[in-house]
Each structure stands twice: as structure tokens, then as C-alpha cells.
Image (cartoon, rainbow, N blue to C red; front, side, top):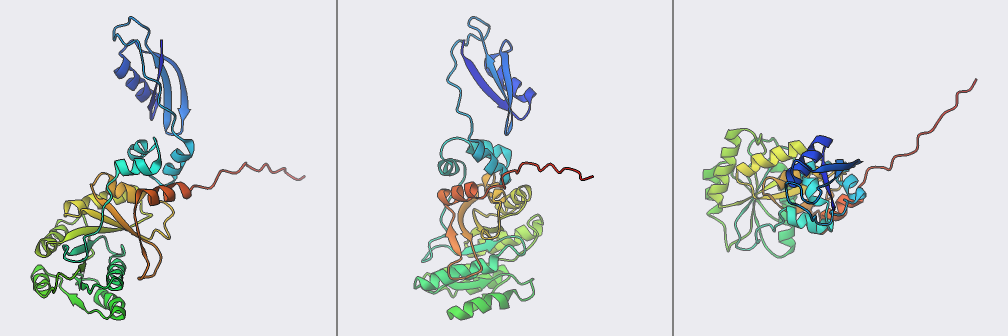
Length: 312
């Protein structure tokens, strides 16, 4: 007789998994609590109905420190379960998508979208700064015709670079602006902020992207509630977004929202905004970078309770 381990969020689930695998005659020999639920030890004697007599060696237990770190970051349990085994950076590479922003010269325009206040304008300025420093002269367009001061804010960044901002908040005006694109210049479009769950807003984004032939990148702040982030990621993915740029990684302590936004929505992680500067405020979101951040930021270790003696 050999033993096999099964886990579940509660006892009934762990037992159900054991009996689905070994059959109804499986014997539950022991149980214990683990960080993410309950673990049972099950076995099946030779000759019983399922005919199973040999079992593979039980998998190694998940690293408690990693389990605690993923829980601290608010990584959804179904995703965290897939990140428990092996090196964390390799697990992230297998589970999530990672990609590169469009090639600057001759590549498709890049349309930045996201909820209001996500950091699209600053990200646009950062990308334009990078392009100028690399020797390219980008075309910078704002399609945000609703937010007061949006054009002025972007223009304040680009004036320092010697660039003009084109305003094109409608597919027709955007098409006209792009007709003046010269020498396959890079194009960065600061998209309009709006409600991602409003079908009219999604249709607007889809029309802008279709006119420009643009790649859509969702700009999303880190530190948001994971469930909200996942819903926002899904809404923008339905509007055509294929990439994700995270912002505010210098302030956010928990990254579960970033992982939740991309994991189920096929959004490729590309870059992250760190710090207030435009010149050096973007870093590559690689599996190694994410793994280091996930394991470095931990909840404070619990301190022993202090027993106070009453004074008479």
C-alpha cells in the first residue's frame, strides 16, 4: 500500500478529490490544516475495485513563505495554486503572458487606454521621451477630448521634448492626423478615459483603434483590488486590448491586481511605471522582476502578544 496526498479548500473537497482519483473505496488515513485549506492522506489497498495498487510519490509541499507572500499580495487563489511549484519566475512565465510594446520605427501606432486617472498621459509622455532619447521623432496624439486640461497636461510634457501634440478625439480626425505620419514615425496615442463597462465607451475605443490600425495597451494602476482589476482587464480585453502597462509600482505594496487583470484575460505584461519622472520611469515587466517583487514585499511578521499585568 502506498499513500497519496490531496488538498482542498475544505475537508469535503479534499475527500472528494481523493475518491474521484482512487474510487469510492479510498481510505482517508489522516488530515491536517495547510495554509490554503486542508490536506488529507488517502490510500487504497491492493485488490480493491479501482485496481490501483501503485501511486506516484506525493508532490512536495508548497513553500509556506511563498504561499504567505502570494496571499499577502492578494493573488487570487486559483492563480496562486498554479504558482506554488518550482522557481517562481519560471512559474510566472508558464502561467502569464509577457510581451513587447510595438516596434517604434514602422510599427503600428500604440493606443493607451484605461480608466480615468490610471496614468495614461504620464505613460504617453514617458514613451515619447524614450523615443526622443533614442533618436526617433514620435507623433504624439491625444484622443482625450473630455477631461479638462488633458491636452494641456500632455503638451506640458512634450514641449520639453520639442514636440507638438495633435488633438484627435474622433475616428475621422484621428485618420486625418495619421495621414500626415512621415517616414514611418512612431505613434503614441493617449486614449480617452472612461467607464470600461459602458458599451458606448468600448465602441469608441474600438473605432479609434480600427482607424489607426493600433495595438491597444491597457494602462492600469497597481495596488487595486484584484477582483476589480480582473473585471477591468476583461472589459478592456473585450474592447481589443492585448497588452498591459502597470503604473504606480513605486507606491503599490500589493501586486495581486496586476496579475489578476492579465491572468484570465490574455493581456501580455509589458512594462511598469515607477516614480514620477518621465525620462526613466518605465521598467520591463519580466518574470524575474515580478518574482522578486512578489517575494520581497511581505506582510509584517506577527509579533507575540504582550500580556499586561493589572496594577492594583
